[in-house]
Length: 159
Image 1 (cartoon, rainbow, N blue to C red):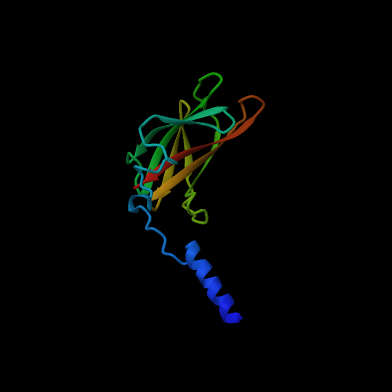
Image 2 (cartoon, rainbow, N blue to C red):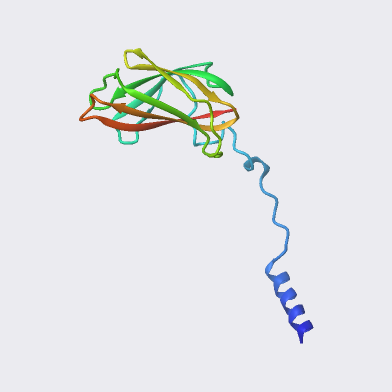
């Protein structure tokens, strides 16, 4: 009786495709590249992103080198208030680069230096490996509204 059940089980499994080799995946779809990964924005000087609550617009005015590369980069950003369009000085800005595909990876601290006219220099923006990076900025504006904290993410891909 056991042999009959075993034979029936194997026959059903074979008929249903259990154990059959899967068709090979399309090799072009196995790895995302900077040209194909839609999570990042193509770099261009002046690119901008809105903050999560819509209070600020963050513009990446310049990256040295540009576009950003694997290793150390220096970024100049401008933070504007959406409601007035004015570039804002006197903000408390902190920056954390992270890789969404490797959340446990850390990177070097980024020093933010105000440079006037609503611009801030971020150095070093250390992007040490290829892939998608999210450079997160937390912005605290004591003079915006009744004191506003908001955040923005600049998604870039390093080849």
